[in-house]
Length: 110
Length: 115
Image 1 (cartoon, rainbow over the protein chains, first blue to last red):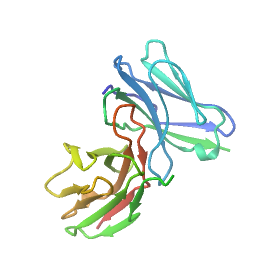
Image 2 (cartoon, chains in turn purple, red):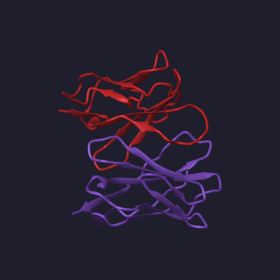
Image 3 (cartoon, rainbow over the protein chains, first blue to last red):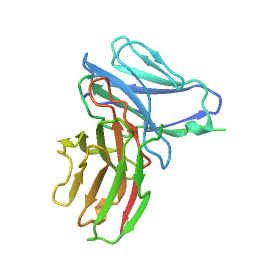
Image 4 (cartoon, chains in turn brown, green):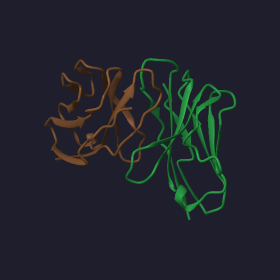
């Protein structure tokens, strides 16, 4: 599976949009981009995934660049409960495995 | 719908002692995973089951770790004997079998401290 690169940490203000970048320059055509997050003392939680089109659900939006070498997870109105480690993971379409990196530690401040 | 259930939530043991963790996946989820998460790092896969068959145990340290999923539902992960370096959070996850992605559902984990 392609490797991903994320900033180790970032802060954002409560009520503002949080934009979390992820680089996956070696992604191949049959690989998806998945985002999970892990709130302190909990297991990881699925957020969203996409192949090449932008995706939106009740939790977040996922913007994938046209060349698919990077993506951005957008939390439209960050709340204090969004403080967590966010993981960007590239997964083969026929794969059965999540390979977690270090993720981005997001701190939402009042 | 009940989520993935794990027990115990916390366990403190002395080194060389055995320890076991239990996981009950979401009903209808045929695929079950065990992960280990060291402090400050992302989870690492230990073993994956499809029903009762272990189909990927390449990362399981087989000298001291064992796992079973006898009836294809709940699962047990065992360490015997435990070492200081086994202190970590052990996570269980499940998903529906087959293609369609990697939307895994994780339990809260068991936090193990080996003294």
